[in-house]
Length: 359
Image 1: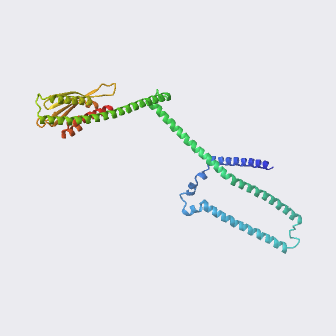
Image 2: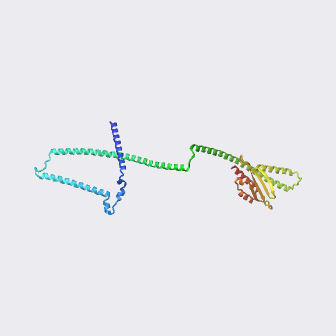
């Protein structure tokens, strides 16, 4: 019994929902101007209307006046019925029995039955009204929820339509900007793979060059220290020769010459010195070999050291071959010429050239 009642209530609920939705659709499709132009109707006035006429024609004021008039008329009606009943009652008492209206028990009974029928109809009408109000209270939030859901779906559909239009426009622009033949996805993936392999190989080469540069820098530092030591030893040897005033037939000259020759050979092997040539009394040309990464051939640079004839100080330096490596030696030359350091200048130029090659 409860299941049947539940199904019946569910059917009634579905009918009420359908009725409410149909009513909402008719209301939205009616395009009522009174609903959409409430402010315009409230602010509308004619040209010949004054402020008092406008206030008197305000719907809210008119509604209040109508309500007051209805209450007043109801009071008048009640007073009229009361006075009419009193008049009839007085007339029935004071008038003669023959002229008095005769109200029989049958008439009272019929009136009572009519009143009972009217009460039953009123009770049924009140029950139906209460049911309708209850359904409105129950279905109102559901209708509102459905309306909000439909509204959100409509807004989302409009937004998606706009995005579709924008995407189609962008696609048309891309097709006009990039005509056929276009790059396909497989070709793009293959190109990406090739570029990845090339970048990996280049990264390995860069890492190998960096390792080689570290080794070369260490070797250059060691060679520079050895050259500096040899330079100091040569200076001490020159001082010893001058102090002893060695003659041409002195037997100590041959070992000293051999030692100096061996030192010069070691310097050439460490710094890859290929040629040492004295162009004039105050100019010395040094040619060095710079090892290049395979399969390139070694690169050669030449330094022309020009000394002042009177003071034997370093006056100027000319270089050949550094420009091809992208090196500007101007700052090094100026700083070392000011302090008269030809050995440091040659070492700094060679270090910068070898660093440029390894990078």
